Amino acid sequence: MKVVLPDRTELELPDGATGLDAARAIGPKLAEQAVLVRSNGRAQDLRLPLEDGQPIQILTTRDTSDPDALAVLRHSSAHLLAEAVRHLYPDVKIAIGPPIENGFYYDFDFPEPIREDDLPKIEEEICRELAEGREWTREEISADEARRRFEGEGEPYKVELVDTAEGPISLYTQGEFTDLCRGPHLQSSRPIKALKLTGLAGAYWRGDEHNKQLTRIYGTAFYSQADLDAHLERVEEAKRRDHRRLGPQLDLFHFEDVAPGAALWHPKGLVLWNALEDLRRQENAKRDYAEVKTPLMWDIELWKRSGHWDKYGDNLFLIPYGESQYGLKPMNCPGHMLLFNSRLRSYRELPVRYAEAAVLHRDEPTGSLLGLTRARQFSQDDAHVFCTEEHIQEEIDGMFDYLGFLYDAFGVRELAHAELSTRPDNRLGTDEEWDFTEGVLRTAIDRMGLRYRVAEGEGAFYGPKIDFFMDDAVGRPWQMGTIQLDSQQPKRLGCTYMGADNQEHTPYLIHRALFGSLERFIGILIEHYGGAFPVWLSPVQVRVIPVGEDHRPAAHGLKDALAAFRVEVDERNETVGRRIRDAEVEKIPYVVVYGDKESEAALAVRKRGGEQSTLSLEALRAEISEVATL
Image (cartoon, rainbow, N blue to C red):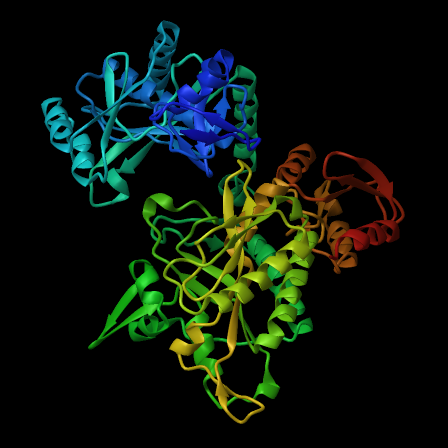
């Protein structure tokens, strides 16, 4: 048999050879350092046999930043964690432990609760394992044999996994610990040079809140201590920037247990919200979008007609009423199609552009809620464009221009990346239609110069789409906006227009959201700026601090003189130093301290960051004016 190496050369191997055999054939040093085989973008264990003609790439301990190489290191680290916990807590029941972004976790059913204080003891036990050294061996057994084994060991979660598994049952063993696992794993523990347990959390078995809650232990691992140190530093910076901490600290929003997944917006937070809304409305008007408003809830028959019921039925908040059942809307598309259908349309009217930033609801699992970035109630800057085939390219180009304007306005272009999702197996329409729609989207995204990857086969059944992502403070990608080209849903809901031939035709529909969820966009902005918003976006642009009670009238007079900006007077009975420090914590761009020596000709001004100067009122007004508008 032969396999194809990354440089396109062929490597001849005996039939049944594994990835490790291929590494040995190339050289003993490569075999020693090998951790994983990658083939057609898929990670494969070194111990598994290769196929004739298979393209392969062998990853090694030198690929320290490769996501797949890190994943196999962390997967093996998770098994070391499980071994350590089993050794320290013999009565524990073991569930699952996969690698995740930036680390790994393992879920356990402890006979008695453990605390964060117990993590150093567990970590010390893992270090003992690493000092002794571990090697992983792989075996395949029948489901019956696996079930008997784990029943005998009193591992009910493993038994359930065996009963629901598809394909061969594989086991990995290191030391005296054997785990049900598909792999892949390292050859040995030698590449694990740095490991840290990072926290505890509760997690329902298999993500179902009706199941027992387990204890999840999080950790991370790297090929070097330097990489771990850099990661922990990034994590600390991310904690400082976490919008869930900064939101209440900056008096922007908070959450209440009686409304999980729905933010309570404070007046200062609504300044940010309205800045996005004002910009959205202003730019929509320039681009000839008509603002509309549609009902908050619909009879579920509409969601069935549109095709959303099959995808979103489990995420709808349902409201029974008489003999009917309604659902709070998770998106605006069907309502906008009914608007389009409200009267007969002519081809001369197209394109028709509807925009609506409506409140939407999706019943996200409790465990997945994460502040503003994953909520149950959110608003999305939805728009839908009904057009002919001839309009599509120009409309999508215009959307990309709009998107570029927004990213530049908020300074987040470097955070943005995208995913082009192409035709799925269950698609509707012809290959010729898909060739056209995919080509339009690919041309548009190439022209914008935004980095993106292609997600083959992950498009919607009605058409391809481009999803836009931004990374939060810890590098987690969040989907923001989307552009979707739809040639099928308008047919389902009977959208038509009269063409030049005096015949009815079905329009194309372009689904478009650029901010995406306004809540999520604001959450990303808070973390991106660390709460230190540009002056034009800052909820409070100037704070005036009167030194004493006698200076309060003059401070309020200064506020009136700066009425074009967002100004507060802090006249609390606190020391001047305390009020200045509070302004720094709240990241106010300009602070004016007003005492006996101050006047309109000479104001004591402190900029965010500590820079101090003396400016006249006219000079201060001119300086702020330059930065207080977009």
